[in-house]
Length: 389
Ligand SMILES: [Zn+2]
Image 1 (cartoon, protein in one colour):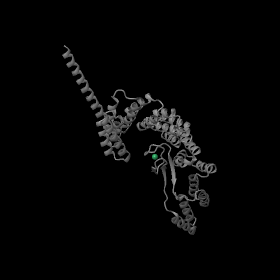
Image 2 (cartoon, rainbow, N blue to C red; image 1 turned 30 degrees about the horizontal axis):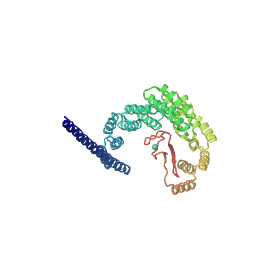
Image 3 (spheres, protein in one colour; image 1 turned 90 degrees about the vertical axis):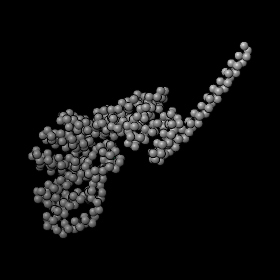
Image 4 (cartoon, protein in one colour; image 1 turned 180 degrees about the vertical axis):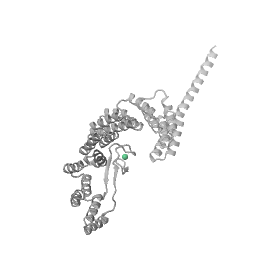
């Protein structure tokens, strides 16, 4: 009996020792593979910083083979796939991570942020929005996520939601916020115009003006809407308001203004308008130019010459004024003067373009824009003048 006891005890002891040896071996192996995984992960990160995505991907994949718990490595793998144009694969990688149990909120947020970007790149905008909402459920103050969500709404042309979200934002400056909100309203109005809802569109333009009295786009579109509905007097009011509220952009209104006044049979009012504008904002050269053109048409060449000269005192590099001066002088038979001005001009000109440039990213266009097509910034447009313009 006692012998059986001893054998049983020895057997238990042997099994115990084997179990201990097995576990120690297993734990060491795990520790070893875990530290190897860390080394691979760091190597992957370094390649990523260097911009060598292929090598980064190779090392990150090795790291997750060694340690399947390396969530950050999986996140990065997905991010690289997205940046290489495989957004769908990235979505799969990131979504699979969310299935894991016991994810800490911090990790869950990081995964969701990457996933939201995948969806945006893959143009699955509604999914991107839902994902952002999940992030905001975890932390409703996540400013980064809100900015991203705003960019998704912009991409979707969902101007109402973009408007509501930005309106609640208290981190950006009041003036930038107001002018961007105004732009959203202009965009919403343009969308309504496409649906032939001119009245509703105009309400949007008017709301835009309430937010930003200098919103040239809103005044212009308001005028265009009235012109489409043949309400020329209202269009005229909108264009005059644009000139008054934002004289720097007055030239945007002039072409339309001339057409509307002509159609209304009030072309004579133009002279009065130019004179008023020159008095209140002498730097608006277009007003001088417009006035000089009127005098030229009426055959009052000397008056036109005087206006050109006073305009050049304000802005000595206006090509159109100088060319007009050449034309006027030759019409007046003052050929020597005309030749001298032309010769001097030809010598001085190096470049004579004026462009609208985005101050944020440098994109430029010859047409005024308020929403940069390249970096998507609002109201970042600046008129760039070379010596001659
Ligand atoms: Zn830009």
